[in-house]
Length: 169
Ligand SMILES: CC(C)(COP(=O)(O)OP(=O)(O)OC[C@H]1O[C@@H](n2cnc3c(N)ncnc32)[C@H](O)[C@@H]1OP(=O)(O)O)[C@@H](O)C(=O)NCCC(=O)NCCS
Image (cartoon, rainbow, N blue to C red; front, side, top):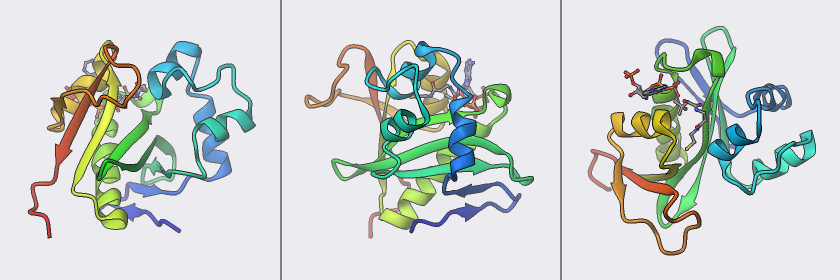
């Protein structure tokens, strides 16, 4: 089982529990917000069952970010894609955006992917019209790369990558 991590200031990255998934389901007001987050194949309206299934919770590494009081503030996943830790379904609490939580979530997810899966290279997809997310990733040092031939949504999304500063072992 993948365990989490605790930052010096008490923020935690850990596995999502059933109550966290119920909370996460409250963060999507409409179909567009779900599509932006997870792509067009994620069903909406969702049921608890379809939501869990479409999140692929049983197949990919899934994490919640909690503040020092234990409140869930973010959710994200990674899986192996072409020898990279590929980040997916990144989201922060709708009422807490633009306060640094997104950057924290991604940094801690990258750290988890490094610790648990040995990744030193990372990637993600983002819709070209998702300005907040795109700027967030650029501010962390992600760079736009040529779009993979085998990936869907070509023309609609950017493919971004980031590499550890540390030399590979
Ligand atoms: C993308 C997302 C995770 C960012 O989370 P966040 O908690 O707002 O991120 P942060 O507060 O750490 O912001 C980091 C940087 O992103 C950029 N940014 C974030 N929101 C922005 C906005 N509304 N407008 C412009 N830039 C924005 C800024 O550069 C910001 O740094 P700054 O505040 O120092 O200028 C959040 O907007 C979200 O959950 N969106 C809905 C789901 C989604 O679209 N996920 C992405 C799927 S690919």
